[in-house]
Each structure stands twice: as structure tokens, then as C-alpha cells.
Image 1 (tube, rainbow over the protein chains, first blue to last red):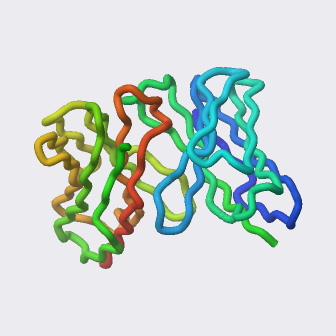
Image 2 (cartoon, one colour):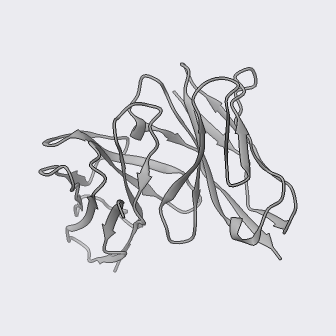
Length: 114
Length: 114
């Protein structure tokens, strides 16, 4: 079955450490996105990519970095510069970047600080 | 800028009760409107969408009508089930923006009791 796979499901970060969240899709989608979800709040866009080797900052990019070397993969690195990283992180994709395209989501990664 | 305001939760209903979750929006253009559902520990799934005024989106007994005059997209279901317990997000995507740059509401938690 096609879909988006995020790993790990749970991740713990020590102070000063960088951690990388994996996102892989086999839907052949061009566009991929990373969101952050805090309790009781909506989703906030961190980064997005519309094509391989290209990505743009979203609304809350500070303290995060991404790469898009392959169409299927869009990993997110939470750097030590992100002072409040505890959140639920969601990866999504869409077949095109048009406004009426639905988003397909992974099952998320819960990141916590030790 | 664009914004989405959802009815505050949590909402608790008995099985077979009627459900309404209010959603109003502010947008400069002619947005596409979406309802997503999130089950515990999972990512979001598209429930329904509408792309122009007076369109009705429907799926699994849920319905929502795009009302341009009242800038609303309220979610309704005639008879809820325990399995409908989840968090529901209203979202909009402006015509001139990327699908992933959707604006999400804060979510409404629905609990259905047997």
C-alpha cells in the first residue's frame, strides 16, 4: 500500500544534541511538508519542498533544517538551536502543490527532551 | 492574513446524537476548505473538502457546506458513533498558495460515549 512512513514514533533528545526525523513516501508525490503540532493547537508549517533539491522555509523554520536529495525522502533535523523542541511532528505530501490538493500525512513522531 | 476559527472543545456526545462543529474563516481570495480527522497517536486524514462556494463535501456520514456569505464550513453528522471519537481540524488553502501552506484551526476534540 502507498503511504508516508515516519520514524521513529518516539524520540528523545538530550540538551545540545541534534536529532533527525525520517519521512519517506512511496506515493510518487512531488511536494512534501513538515509540520509541528503542540497540544491543543493547530499545525504550523516548518519547511516544505515542491521538488527535489529545493525547499522553502515555513512559518517556524528557526532551529530546524531539511534536505530533499530524493523524491521519496524529506528528513527533518531538529538542531540544538531549537530551544523548545518537545512536540508532535507530522510529515505530509501532496501530488502537486495546488491549493485544492489534499494532503497525505504520516503517523507522526513525538519528540521529547530528556 | 488567512485564519480559521473552530468551535472550542472538547465536545462530548452520546452515541447516535447529532454533531455540529462550527468553523469560520477569513481569507483574501477564494480558498479551498477542508476537514481533517486525527485519531489518537496518528497523523491527519482528509475527511472531506469543498473547493468553491455552495459546494457540499461529504464522507462517512459527515457533511459540510461551503458558505461564502457567512464564511463558514460547519461539520455535521446526523448520528455519531463511538468510533467517531477523534480530533477534527478545519483548514483552508488559499487559491494562490501551496497546498501545504494551508491554515489550520486549533482542532476540536470529540468524545462519543456509548
